[in-house]
Length: 241
Image (cartoon, rainbow, N blue to C red; front, side, top):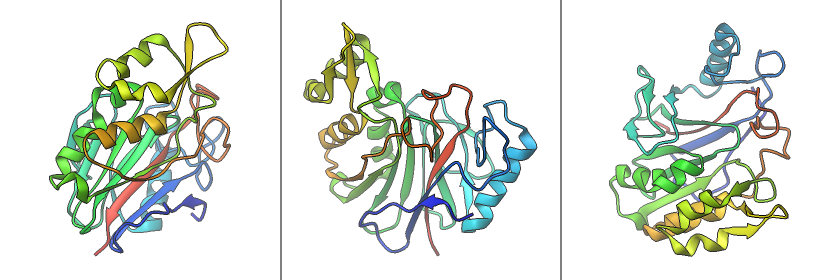
């Protein structure tokens, strides 16, 4: 496997991370080809093969999650598929993993390179505080946390209703700047990257990198909004021995 992204951020040397793309797998259309999601009606044997290719490419043990758009963050365990939307680890070789297809994947580490974490943040989880919960589970001062925001739906494609805007404004009024009126009455264009940065800043995390992708318009990535029957790509972070 050669077609993957490596985050460009000032993480410690022993912190490794990558984002998979659609390329390099065995799945057939509409999951072509490196679908890593086992819940999207793809052939389970092919998904297992795709995950094996990823594992072999980086010599890691990914911790897969059953993501439910919540705020639960667990210690990463490759032997257990936990129902959670975030995980953390201090064990080298264990990869914290977030699977997405428009939602926001966020990767975390501390400046000392002793802990890493990954979070899956759709708008519901983001509004409920999944990023803040992940920072808390890292158990280091917020000023020591680095975050990289991976590929997600861009502000030009993320149209939402007034209820989504209110879900953020009710607890964080400053997030009003992340919404602009849509051409469709009563709806708004939301910037999920701005929302994440504002929420992280509110809990003391300002070293936030990445962003600027759009899964809907970038064919390298799976996008549920572009095609509801599709696969999932993964954003992973781990500690190197």
